[in-house]
Image 1 (cartoon, helix red, strand yellow):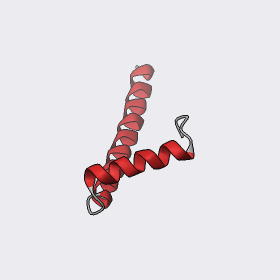
Image 2 (cartoon, helix red, strand yellow):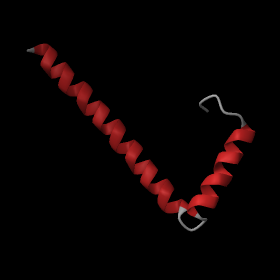
Image 3 (cartoon, rainbow, N blue to C red):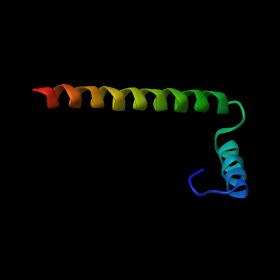
Length: 56
């Protein structure tokens, strides 16, 4: 996972919990998931547009 070990991951998780609190974590995770989905969809649409432009 990005060159991070289990110890570093736990430390980052603890910092995130301290900053955002336990009640905000589900909202934060949901927003991150939606952002990644939109990013992947945008990348796919960009590839489709490039293929169409290459055919011209």
